Length: 267
Image (cartoon, rainbow, N blue to C red; front, side, top):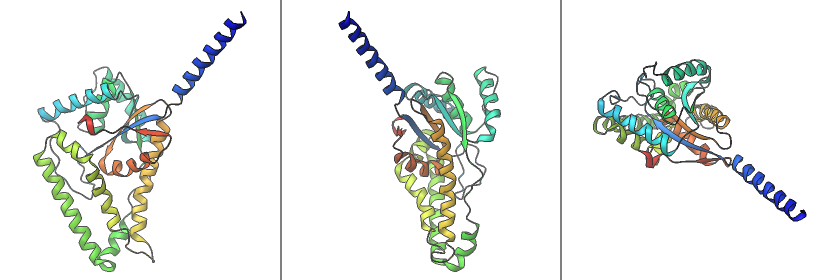
């Protein structure tokens, strides 16, 4: 009897240990950078976006969403909307699950709602932070006179990035655009815009560095919201503008409590 009791105790201990290890598995996070499907024209880079309502684009969105839902199987889908909008988002999502909500032309709905529903009704959450914005007024005020060479280089870079972006939207399919936007090359190109003007005002008012810091500040807050949602055991899909993901991906890469799952193979 003592041997049997010891075996039962050992088996129970191993089972509890296995459950504890499973419960403490780090959250897996997949970052998906997008363009704004209904472009409000607020970004520095002005792009004439492709029509995501076309038959081909709609078919791809459906196929892509199904693939993400099946192969990544997110427990939570985080969307670029302010946290204060969460109540309304919940209402819209419940209506969508009942077939009573028509998806607006917006990446949060066209991709986020589709993936969440296909994954079996995953939670949808807002994670945007809009109290902090890219505060570049002083930078743009001073750069033309105090750093004309940087201003010229900045204008050239913006023109090049804009032309490249427009060409992508005019020549590639939706799959091709998303694949290109989520490449390391495009992420680095996006970050280079802020670093190019970072030295403006160095040793004085640091107008460039403070402008760049404000953008990182906003994204640090957004990543804090991601961390809050990405507790152990969760599988979190984050959908946001590519400019945010270009910064947030570096935070995730250094986060020892969470694991990155790359979206590259899903396009």
